[in-house]
Image (cartoon, rainbow, N blue to C red; front, top):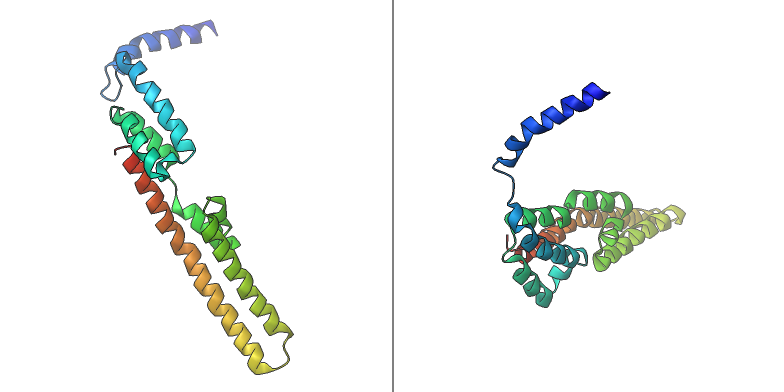
Length: 171
C-alpha cells in the first residue's frame, strides 16, 4: 500500500507540468470573472429563459465575455436530442412531446391516437362490413398520419430550441 502511494505521488509530480502546459487548459487567473456569468447563465438555462425575447437579450449580455469553453459546456448540457422524444412519441402516442414540455403538440398527438383507436374499436363492434372497413381505414390513416407527425415534429421543435439556446449563448 505504501509503495502504491509513493508511485502515485511520483506520477503526479511528473505529470503535473505536462497537464498545466496543455493547450486545452484554461487560465486560472480569470476563473473568478468567468464563473459568475457561467453560474448565472446556468440558472437561466435551467428555467428556459432563452425562449423569451427579453431574457434572451439578458443572456446574451452575460455570455458576451464568457469563455467559449463555458459556452460549450452550457450548450452541451441544455441542448436537446430529438431522437429520444421521437422514439417515445412513436411508442406512446405523443407522451415524448408532453414530457419534453410541449403540451400543445403532445395533446394533439394524444388526441389523434385516441381517435384512431376509437375508430378501430368501432370497426371491431360493427356488424356492417362496409362501415367496419371504413372505420379500419380511418384508424389506419389516423395512426400513420399521427405517427409520422410524432416522428417529424420533435426534430422541428428541438431544432428551434437548440437554435434559441445557441443564439442566447452567442455561439
